[in-house]
Image: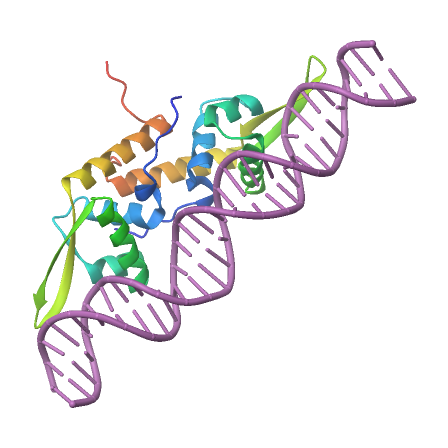
Length: 100
Length: 100
DNA sequence: TTATTTCTTTCCAACTCGGAAAGTGATGGC
DNA sequence: GCCATCACTTTCCGAGTTGGAAAGAAATAA
């Protein structure tokens, strides 16, 4: 077994879920994400900030009915990092398909 | 997306690796595990203790050349918990095969 | 102008982590 | 028998992470 190389930014349960949730989507709204994860505004905000600082997430802000809203998107780099992390987990789990 | 239900005992990187390493084996020696994970004796000991307290790991102790040695095994419950955790991760990753 | 919405930042208490050091128990060597 | 050594285990401690509440900030509604 090669030593696991986890991306700690992604491995944290809440951030892993954020990435998993964003991964099949173009973008997701802050509040949707917050309700999905069952966390407070502050917690989601802080996790998104960490993901942004890692270059994994990017935001779009605009108004809906005069109210400011925010959407998060996984960047290309974020998608790659998430995919690698998942691959690493699958490798660990012995699930990775062996090339024939 | 259903809310993820991670087993925090297993999710921690080092313990995830311990489970992954033990999973295909009958048992593994303390020192082998320690070198595999690149952690100190104390760290491995503490992680194994947590896994034992969760009922996921069991030990066998006996002597080799008059020296006491220890082997760790994943219990049935531990194998189940590890498998569930991996399934949960795969589900999150959207990798799980959909039953036809 | 004040209230409200939608995040963001600060504050704080709880928890986890890892390694070093000290401790324990069982030999091995002399 | 006695001290050293091995194989862990436990304690200690500093560092880092987490989450929620509370306080802020910025924009718009009323």
